[in-house]
Image 1 (cartoon, helix red, strand yellow):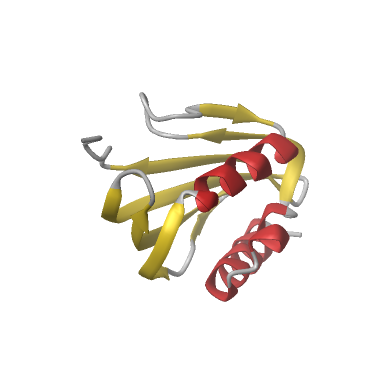
Image 2 (cartoon, rainbow, N blue to C red; image 1 turned 90 degrees about the horizontal axis):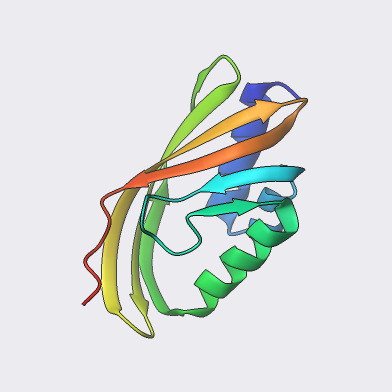
Length: 122
């Protein structure tokens, strides 16, 4: 798959809430990078990334809304703006905007990095 095809598939899966399919686009040895100081700042391996997502999702009490924008592709990278409005079990309601940057190699996502304002915890 080309970078554009990977980007379009990822966006489609995310918009439909098909996160298992979205993570299926990741390479087995993919790298996920959160903002400095956040839990699980660096995670290596598709299975570990999926487990990290499931732990995060289990902490959501209620989703109020969110968006997945259109991908912008440049070479073997693409960026997708996303937003979320959710109430978390431990920390309450949070609204968040982020840019999700992906690097594609051999038709798979090799690296994902997430760029957002780090919320205050407390």
